Image 1 (cartoon, chains in turn brown, yellow):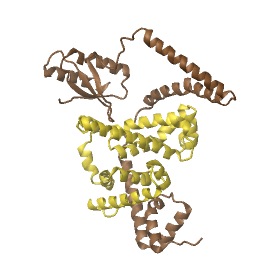
Image 2 (cartoon, rainbow over the protein chains, first blue to last red):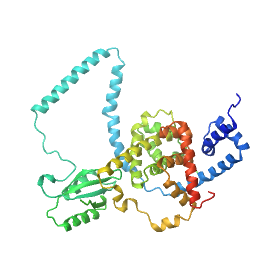
Image 3 (cartoon, rainbow over the protein chains, first blue to last red):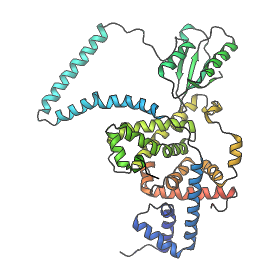
Image 4 (cartoon, one colour):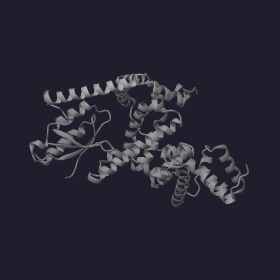
Length: 226
Length: 193
């Protein structure tokens, strides 16, 4: 089929396609268009040469920037184990069971049965909530309730080491009588409210020093100015 | 030099292994993509510590979602798409926090410390100038330049990752490279050889 584009259109299109000509990912018809145009347009040929140099410079610029030590595999494995337990235990069984049930002819009966079972479960849960024992002693990821004591509680911002376990963090928060009130931010920074035994600013400084000394758990700890 | 098993195994074989909960395949995939994913995330969030954390999120999402990968796009396109979503979530989160919270820029310098002497030495090289020039571009422009020039993705693949029509990607890269060229010329880099 003849190419009906005007020379101006071919020039504009080539100009847009040049980066992908340079990175070698154009479709054959696009590549042919670009190569044909480059033979007859000095401006685009020069632009193509510039782009090759720009590409090389960008690659060098990005590769020269060192990649820091990325999250170690064990920390990913820990999260994976969590996901794996979910994926390959109850969910997988539920999913495959449901799929096989829905492939049978007795689907309407099964749906009716499910509705009845669901109603029974909800009624049972309501009964447990109403008549059952009240749950106490739920422990949030914090130390003792700070605000309830009516004592001024300064705030600090703190970032934990990626390797710090939840248990260790809980222990540390308990030790400093702190509780997380916000976070984590995208940088993994938490805001923690701490309770002091006196109003002495030196006590807070001492506490921050203690936290900073725990380099196994804490990346940094800073006071948040009120 | 003999190729390792990791290098020989195709992306498709690796992701199939991951979908079957093969941790060896996952480790190979992690090694193959961690650097590229980190660099892409760093381009988007412009913060090494956040980029590091996001790499972890991305790889966990890859593990969880491997079974849903249908091969309609390349594996790299799929992984970069996940990375982009994670980065956008993180950026939104930071923007929300900044409205009513201490700016994260005020966080201690340990988070993003750089040695002045190293920076000074780097400034002398074209690579360092290019890096500085890239940093002045908008996130959208930096992203398409990196995906096209560094990751060598096709226009279609980039369009899938950034969620834009093909023509938008073409014009975005056109303006991005014009802008980069202008900045480099302003820095005294005439030819990029």
